Length: 200
Image (cartoon, rainbow, N blue to C red; front, side, top):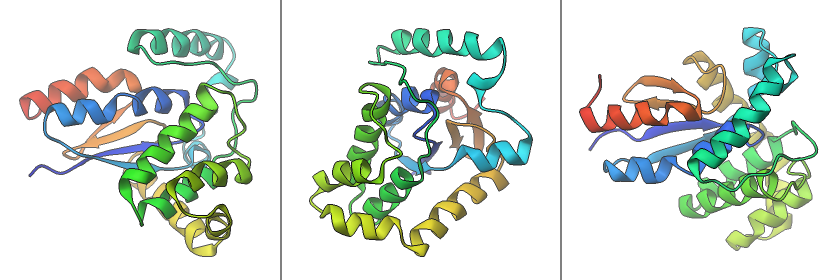
């Protein structure tokens, strides 16, 4: 069986949200699975000297239009939140905590967090909110809160982020398909061609 597609994302990345609504169905069409791997973009920006896209003069204004247009193109419900960007450490750590126990529940949690921010405009930097969303998995919010404050999960998220950067990630979404890197939700058509043809 072919290796899973790696999907590196930051919950505060609008293009990651758009990709999250499409990548599983695209992969399944070609009999592939997807490994969801939340990371933090801040360290990648520091490493490369980049700034968050929307903070760049002129380019940021274009990006706002492009994000909304891309959401319409993909048929994804979207509303730009009032506060952007937000820290996503709590959500990313909670994802890994859930993933180690139940992958489908972790995936459902990730979708719920993305939609809480990019559809409902909720503050996903709030650990209490994140724990409340995660508690729908059947694990108590208090247990999740304790876990995401633990050194082990802090180290896990740091290691996942550093590892992705070492492998070439500089933005999100970042995909690895059979070792081939693809950056951005707009690369989904290329990923599909890669899956359909076995590489090009």
